Structure formats: structure tokens, C-alpha cells
Image (cartoon, rainbow, N blue to C red; front, side, top):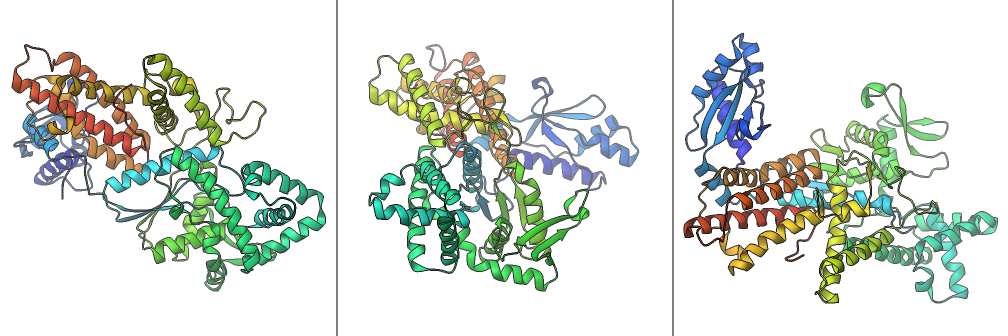
Length: 577
């Protein structure tokens, strides 16, 4: 199996620790050097080990260095401070790592991963609240696949329940007066609003809507046909956005609440039979203790209402059953709003308690915060309404078009539009992905479209700068990906070091489901390349041919890493800006 730089170094020092009878539960504490003058990496584990062995930390650090078999990996080690070990990697080792194509690492522990993402309610059009789940989830899908995992996407859409009886009843009514349903359904928000008004104002209509829910859930062919028609139109609205956002989501990834309908009754019966769920005033509940949830008081998890109806909780348990028992998933990741944290904790505990999920199944809530307007409040229209996601995308595209047109006045309209479309989507996505997903963040068109700072335009421009070098040299970037490299200057060493860390950074990103780790890595990569380009001439006449070829090869690897990293975020690169 291909190993990463971190794994190579960790093994070297772990073996040295063992040679000195340092227990395996004492961590090596390997990390990137905090400052360039400290070298490439630091090992800080000597302090904890010295305490366990009752030794002087600097003395133990010296013994650790003596026991590290560092041939062809480490060029230099030195002790700093109370017992830190600073490490500079050997250039030949770095070059070897680069030629081993560290962009394709296949050593993530999970084999089959199910990622629950996007999950809009099909009764309405997607709004800005669905953006984060969609693009964070899609980035994780791409990253886990790159790490060699078998990834299954589950777009758990809301397509079942009382509101669909209401919508179906309204659909039947307007069919009689207006055969052109496509026009009526072209604006789902308006369709939903009109049906809700009728539901609230007409008791006859409301009763009929509730009747249709029963008929729908019992498999009535006529009602099912109308329901399928509405769902189809709703999903086409969603797919338009998924395509515009350059995601991997397709109609085949949709597994709505209706998909799990036949599992609901058996799930409830199982939980009652096993004594996990109990009757509580007619409802069926699982009562979870403070110890089970890490909370202050007992919390009920309702799985069936008094009237026999099922809830999100029931469907979510059924989905776990399907994903673990049927699909044999090793890891379940839910990219869901942080406001659902309690629900997710309850779900995970109940699933494990009932053995619906296996004890070894990894279940994670990749929670995210709220997208805020520049006024610091949840993102809304000027009138205070919900912003449709398609409207946000269209505005970003319009702004990008104006910006590109101003910067490239000799371009034709097709060139401007092509770049504007890609730049808008890249900017919207990167502005979100570059933030810690747990945090709320301020959405600003001006900041996300800026060419300065940690933005998509900056990274895309850095990529085009590299491509322009190859155009000027009249050579192909791909031809230099396998050419030999000779690291002569410190800025070359630092750039090569950073490229070699790509695989480790992807593993870190996956372990914590934090796409902003990858964003920070790519931003730093762009900065290191700019520094290398300033300090190490490539195409000047006085640069020796072998140096020129080596620097072109290092530039090609930088471009390939940038392109791969951005693609893993769902961002398409461009060749000119």
C-alpha cells in the first residue's frame, strides 16, 4: 500500500520509541513545523515520553534521534527548546514521493461510505438553506472516492406526508380548469402557497387532502400517479440546480422518505418487542438517558404518533437499517444542519441500541452552521422572504459576468459568459467550503468574487498563471508530470514539500469531514508557488536547460495538485482569466 509522508515519519519515530521501551500509548506527536525556520516537521512526543520514563526531555530527544533509522528520508534532525525534534526531509525522498503520484492515495480505513446530503423538501423549491448540505456533501463524496472508498450518495428528500395530500388534492382541482400543468408547476413556491391557502380556508379541501394521504400511503394507483407527477417536476427543479452547481448528484441518488415506507411498521414493531420503545400516552417513544446522550435530562425520541402516523425519526431509523443491513456500509455521514444535532445524537444511539447499526458502524453528523446576510442575520430577501437558491446562483452569475467583461474587454460574449458561469459557481462554493462548516458565515458577493485573499478567483488565477508559463514555453503541462526534478533552492524544497503533503491533507479532511482543511492547503500552495516563481526564474535566457526543465516539472505538479484539489471541491479550473 502506498504510504504518505506523515505515515513514513510516524513509523520511523514509533520504531525509535519502541527501541527505547517507550510504550505504544505514548504518542509520537508529529506535526508540520509551526515556523519555516523550524524545518519541515516537528516531533513533540519526547516530553510526554520523558515524563513516563522519568528522564530529562532533551536527553531523551537525543536518544530518540540516535534510534531513528532516517536513511534516505530525513536530511537533518536537531533538538530545540525543552525537547522538540525539528526535522528537515531529504530532497531525494521528497522527489521520490512526488514521482510516486501522491495524488492517488488509497489507504482510508472505511471501505463503503454512505453520505446523506442535500435533502430538500419536494413541496417547495430549493432555497439558500440547502446550499451548504449540497456542496459540503458533494465535496465529501469526491474526496472519499479519491481515497479509494466505495461511496454511495443518498439524497433523502422529503416526498411524503400530509403536505403531499394537500398538493395532490390541489393538483386534481386545477387539472379540471387548466390542462397546462407545466405552467402551474413551473413555480413550486407559488403552487405550494396556493394549495396551502385552499387547505386553510376550505374544510372540505382539507378533509380531502387528509384522505389522499391515507390513499397515497396505502398505494392507491390514481393518487400515486399524481404524486409521482408532482415529485418528477419537483426533482427536475432540483436537478437544474445540482447541474448548475457542478455537483455529482443525479436523479439516481434520490431516496425519498417514501422509499422507506414499507420498513416503518416493522421497525416500530421491533423496537417495541425488544423493549426499546414504550407506549407514552398513545405514542411510541424511546426514552434515552442523560448518560446515553451526554445531556442533563432524559429525552424522548418519538417514533410513532398517537394517531398511528410516523415521523422523520422513524424514516431515519429505517434508512439506517437499509444502509447498514442491506448495503453493508462501514460509515454513515449525515451532512445536516447543526440545529438537528440532538435528533442525530438520538438517532445514532437508538440505531446502535437496537442493533440496527452494528457496533463497529461509524456514524457521523457533519453538522454545519447558517449562511448569514451581510447584516449578520440569516440570509433573506429584502422583503424578509426565503431566497431561492436558483436566484442566488443567477445573481452570482450576473455579477461575475460584469466583472469578467470589465477585466477582459477584448473577449467575445461567449468567452465572457463561459468564464462568468464557472467563476460564479466556483466563488459561491469556495466561499462556503473555505469556512469551518460548524461556523455561521457572512455571505458577501463582493468578497467571494475578489481576486485577493483566500477566494476561488485567486486560486483559479494562480492556476492560469502556471498554465500561461507552459503556453509561453510552447510545451504541454502533462508532458512534465513525470520529468525529473532537482531541488536547488529553499523555495523549491518548500513547494515540493507542500505538494508531497497533499495525500495527508486529504486524509485529515476526510477524518474530520472538514473541506476547509483542503481549501487552506490549496491557498497555501498557491502562495508557495508565487514565492517560488519570484525566486526561481524558469524561462529566462540565463537559466540552464536542466534547471528550466526541473522547474517546469515542479510547476506542472503544482498545477496538477491545484486542479485535482479544486475538482475535489467541485470547482472546475479554467485556462485563462
